[in-house]
Length: 183
Length: 369
Image 1 (tube, chains in turn orange, yellow):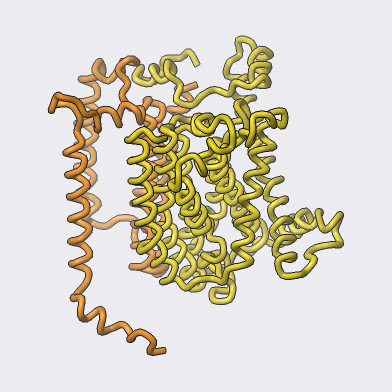
Image 2 (tube, rainbow over the protein chains, first blue to last red):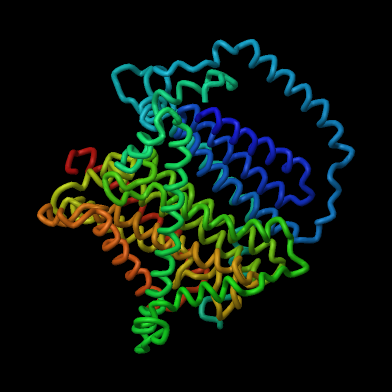
C-alpha cells in the first residue's frame, strides 16, 4: 500500500511542480507550490517522519505560503494575467537545473545503500525530536536547547529589524494618525 | 503490493504504522471477508470511512443550520422557520435543494483557476479534521501521533480558500473580505496554537485518543477543572480564538454583510456558495468537538456511573453545547472593528495565552498535574 501512496504523492508533487513552472499568474504558481509542499509532506509521513511532515504543512504550506499569497495579492492585482510564460532569463535556469538534477541523481545513485533506512533507527517522531533537542543531562554534549533558543533569538532580531526598516520613523507614523477622539 | 518498484527506503514505514489502522469490529469483519485480498479490504474500509465522514458532515451541517436559525430566532423573540416539517426541521433540506438547483454563475472577469478551486478547499480541510476526532475508543477514522498539530495545520490551510476565492472573484468587496480574513486568521492562529500547546502540555500527549484517556474518571478530571485556573483560562482563550478562526460574529469580518455585501463569497452562487456555507458549519462542529476533546473529557461521561450511555452521545452532547455557546455569542455581541479585533489578539489574548502556557509548564514541572 505504501508504494501506491508513494507514487500518488510523487505524481501530485511532479504535476504541481510542472504547473508551478508553467503558470502564467503568480497566484496560480503559489497555489501549485502549496500542492508540491502538501505532497512532499505526505512523503515525509511515509518515511516515518510525521513531525517533519506536519511541520511542513503548518509552517511552509500554511504560514509562509499565506504570506506569499498575501504579498502577491497586495502588490499586483489581477492585471498581469497575460504575463509571458518565460523570459530570456529562464534560459539561464535551464542548464543550471539540468546540472543540479545530474548532481542529485549521481549523489543518490552513489549512496543508495545509505538511503535504505533502518527501521530501528527511525528518529522522526515528535518524541524523538523533542528528546534530541531538549535532553538535559550531566553531559554538555546532549541536547541542542541552547542552539534552539539562539535560533529563536535570531529570528526575533530579524523580525524587529524588519519592523524598524519598514517604519520610516515613529514620529511620522503618529503624526499621520488622527488624534484620539477627533471624530 | 508485492512489486519492489519503489526504493526500499520506504519499506520500514510498514514496521511502525504512524496512522493506526481502524480496529473496530466492522473493519475486522471486512478484513476477514476479503481474506488474502488485503488491498480490497483497504479500499473498502477507506471508502466506508470516507462515506461515514461525508454523511456525518452533511447531516451535522443540516442540523447546525437549522439550529442556527432556531437559536437566532428565539434570541430575538421570533419563532424562526415553522412551516416545513416539525418546527421547521425540514428547512435546511429545502435550502439545500434550492441551492442545488440554482444556476452556478461564472462572472466573466474572474480568475478561473482560483475561483473554481476555492470552494473545494474548506470542505476538504473540514473532512480531514473530522477524521481524527475520537467519537469513542474505536469510533475514530485515524489517530495520528500528532493529532492536535495536524488539526492546527488544517485550520491554517482552510484560510487559503477565503484568500484565493476572494482574490479570484476579482471584486473589491471580496478582496477586502479576503484581506481581513487573512490578517485575522494569521493573528488568531498564534493564540489558538498556544492554547492547543497548553492542552498538550497539561496532558502530556499529542494524540487525540490519548488526550481523552488522560481525563478518565469523574468530571473534575477534565482539563477545564483539573488544572487550577490554567485550564479555565485556556478554555476561554480557545473559545475566543476559535470564534475568530471560524469567522463567526463578533469576528465575522470576512463576510460582514453590512459593510462588504457578502464579503469573500459575494461572487459565488449555487453549489459553489453552498460548499462554503456547508464547510463553515462543519468547521463549527470540528471546533466544538476539539474543545470537548481537549477540555471537557471528549467521549467520557462526567461520572463513571453514566458509562452505559455510549461515547459518541457524550461527545455530541458536549460538542453541541459548545456550538450553542458559539451561536449565543453570534446573536448577542455586536461586530467589532478590525483594529479592535487585532488589538484584542496582539495586546491581550496572545500575552495571556503565552503566560498561561508558562503557568501550565510550571504546574507540570512541579508535578501538580
